[in-house]
Image 1 (cartoon, rainbow, N blue to C red):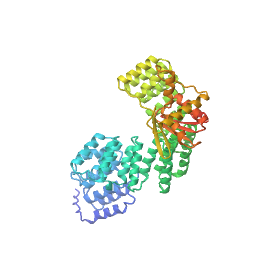
Image 2: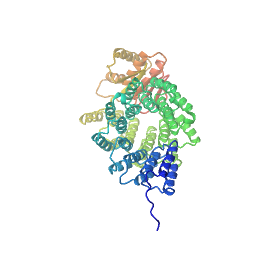
Image 3: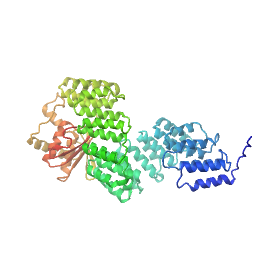
Image 4: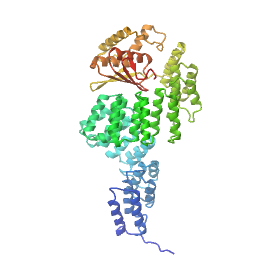
Length: 596
């Protein structure tokens, strides 16, 4: 029978020697090194699994590994040797590893076991795990627990709370926690966390406001800061601001940051600066990732350069890069907006067969859109009926939009019936069905539908348009008279209308309510938000300069015709980004070829 090995005292040289080796390799930590040193301690020196000094440094070594997936299983095994009473440092270290791993829920499970008293380093990894799991309720419980224990005052705890609330969509709560941090205690992580929370929740103006406040305290931005700010600039179409930011990141060397490069591609693409996006892409060279390729492919597709997007995808394939699900959405989107039905199905099949990407609802929705835009509405309906995934409201809404476009009443009403079940009260669905009824002359049904909207408290999203001029972004809504120069803007609108009539323009009033006079219908169209923005830009910008508009809704058919004529009469390039795509108006033509 083998004789038991006596416990090695903490002063024994073997554990201290192994700890020294672990420290020596901290510059390039790896699981292989940790296991070799651990095995040497156990076999050659007889150090027990429960030795606290060795375990602590092993776990710290594992938590320091940045490349690849964190070694969670090994870390938990090391921690198990310290049970039932692990020291708080070792437990917190395993929580860090778990929170960064593919199984962040393990961190919450370990915390529930109450293996050691929590301290200030316990809660940040737990908040990180909740953020990754989007587990808001559990995170709020942890927040209350940490406050009760008096452990939320330190800045790194509050930073992780800001990140949690921002990730879960509670950007106001994130900002409230940020405000609780004394100004002098806020570090770069504090500012980045609150900006990222606003950026990821579609609040670009707040991002830019926070960024200005950050610059006032003389804090130098890093790559994470600039990604949030560039994303916000892209969201509101602030091209001039984006270009100034591009100059800034170039001066400080951040332009070589791959994430910043990708954000710049996205910025220029979303602001209609396709050539600038291409230039950034080319300058990235070997730093390009699949995200870089995907950003440009999606950008080209959204700007109406569908064939260019497909050509770029072909080059990407020749580079032996593996597309992602998002890449394929961009490819299918390109086919959809160019009417390339056969190509769309070919890419869809290749996505499954060559790249093993299982179709998600976004891909299936693209196929419905592909058929619907091409006028093959019955095929689109049949495609939905045989879809391998349960069609969601977005898919049915896509079909309803195609029905409104191509006047397919029966199928449109079938799509509406499904939308009432899946997403009742969505204002956009009422608008689409109303447009369909108006298109086929069913005005009584239009009135009934609009009364139903009032009865059920459904409010139509007001259309608004943004235009950037001289470092400022101006917003207009339909019939807007809040601007201090409204009188001049409306005089300009009247002048535009008069010049367009001489070009033979006749307003398309089909979709305007039937119970108002024809002259009032024309007035209603003339005061759409994008026309107000264009009139203001014509007043305030230099002749020959491009006008860039960002609109939150789809451009109506009449405004599309009007902007084409304005581009010809006033010899201006007008770039409009609406809800679904870019329109480049020049010389009386649009890049979409009236296919949108």
